[in-house]
Every structure is written in structure tokens, then in C-alpha cells.
Length: 306
Image 1 (cartoon, one colour):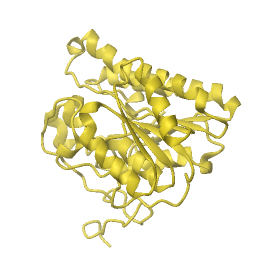
Image 2 (cartoon, one colour):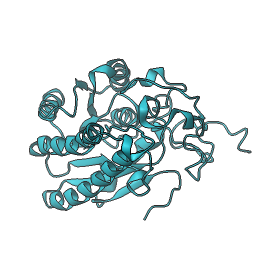
Image 3 (cartoon, rainbow, N blue to C red):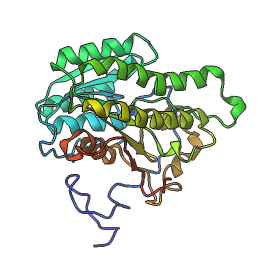
């Protein structure tokens, strides 16, 4: 079968050429006010709604996913539910309509969904988020941090102190506060999975603050893994490559570069869809990865890392 007439796989296990398993989106230039809505993107990212097939790998688990309204976080929330987990999602209040779609997907899988809007820059939100997740799910044993802030600027002088601080407040300090709030509830066998980026290794010059924050997440998570493995809690990292999410049209990249997004960076010749990232998070939360701790799993289409 040629790559031109290759049928799309029915689920994540279907055999396909990885270069064409999902289309090269080549999105038209488009902008949204931050944080943006996935439902208003062209094309709308694939969260695996029609393709992700669970096999019972997370039955009985109780998971909290930040950034669970859209993009990678939403794909993870849907995959976890289809694997048998009850799921709480965190998101900004402005993203409610996207969050509603994910809640529908979780409940359609027969699992409990808990939606907790709020802002990770709010120092009181992490505690409230964890408390509401624990109350709604009846406990917590899987923490997945995906939410992030990304703004492109053409020059270092264009990055204000306020932007730099906001990026680290969401991406790094928000994670720190979230882990502190969740830790008292996590028992041996629990997992924490954070989200770095290819940019932790190869920083884009127009996203210096974002790239630096992702490097900090990677380092923090590896240190945390050494601290918590003695308690039977595994900490790991997923580092995505270019992935088509609402971060891009809401100021994350230069809009003029969107038609080539991912195709010029990844050896695969295309950006990833969020659905392609979800299995990595499922693996790291499941017992299949019981001997994996302190690892960064790069899901980047073949971009070589150190």
C-alpha cells in the first residue's frame, strides 16, 4: 500500500506508516486571544475521540490532569478514562466550552469526571484543585501536569519581566505548588507525570522563556523522582515535539509560520496530533512502567536529544 492511499488506523494499535498516520496539518495563519479555544481552531486537533481504544490498564485509578480541556491534556484525560480511570481536569475558566467536551468524553467512557476551573498562577488554586479532585474522585493516585504558558517574541528585548515571570509562574511554580498539594494524598504505587518539551534540549530563539521553563521542569522532575521513589511514588516526564494544540494560534508561535508548523522541524515531516501523545502518559501511569522512574520519554517524531 502506498502512503497516498493508506487508510487511517481504526485505533492507536492499527498498523500505519508513521509519516502519514496523521495528516500534515499545514494550518492557515490564524490567531486567537490567549488562552484560546481548541474548538475554534482550523483544523481542530485530534484528541483520539474516534480512535483511542482502552485495554483496562488504569482500572480503578484516580487521576488529576492539568490543561485537561484541550490539546495533550485533553487527549490524556480521554485516554485515561477509556483505560478505566476516573479523571479530574484543571483548566482556565475561559476554556469552559472545551472542558465540557472532555467531560462528555470521560462520562461516555463510563467514568467519573470532575471539572475544576482556575488559574495556576493563583497560589491558592493548587490546594483547592487537589481537594476538589480528591473529594470528587474519592482519592488521588495519578497526577499529570500538562498545562503550560507559551508566548513567542521576535527578540529578547521584547520579552517583558511580566511575561517571563508569568511563564515560570504557570509552568514551574504552578507545578511546584501542585505537587506539594497532591503529595499528602499519594500512596505507594502512585505516579506523577510532568510535561517538558523538545525545547528543553533545543530552545527556539523566539520562545526563550518557555524553553527555559521546560528545561526547569525536566530537571525538577528528575530530582523529584529521586526523592519520591523511596516512598514508592514514580515520577517521569514526557517531552513532546511540535504538536498541534491551541498554544500555537493563541500567541505561542509566529502566526506566519503556521503553514510549516512541525513539517520543517520533525524528521517525520509533520507535527503530532495530541492523540499521539496520550499513550506515553498512559504507559507512565500504568503498571507496565513499574520499573521506570526519573525518565524523560521523548515523543517528538525523531528529533534526536542528548
